[in-house]
Image (cartoon, rainbow, N blue to C red):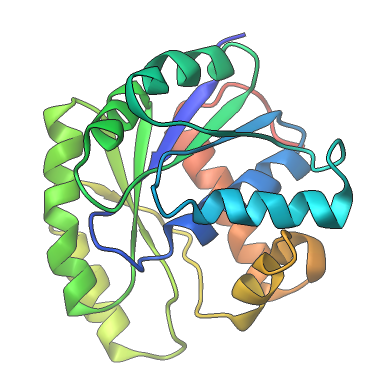
Length: 218
């Protein structure tokens, strides 16, 4: 087995990286893939979420594999996880640290979450440049999009002018996504028929396909 490695990166903090990684992981797991999570962010938010998940489901029933990695071990451990899982999802640090560069270099696709704000838009280019310097395909994903916001459409238009694919699926600014995280869950588990869960499912499938995922999703 040689799994698909997807790194979620954004040099601006607070862009929703960890929430996106967790929701992508559970959605792909629910569709029949074996998924490994790798947390290389010093803030360790994904690891805290996974700890909460273990409390909610039990240590052996999370449905996911989790590793907190740093330093020189990063590339080797990511490759080892890819050898035994269909997908490896990496939550990177919000700055261009060595581990983030390594995680991007190892990936088939770099997903860059972008909230519809000028600050997020301006922060996107350095991450794009980093992906291109490592010769890895980037994909921009609109996140926390408010309903009927003119600014969202303006930002999306500007993103489409950048040299990167913009995901067709997007995640709305939905309380359910953040609320589910508190118990180590995702909206795909707490509100399975909700609009938010459907958005996550669509985005996860689009990202997996863009990353070259070979397995058929259930």
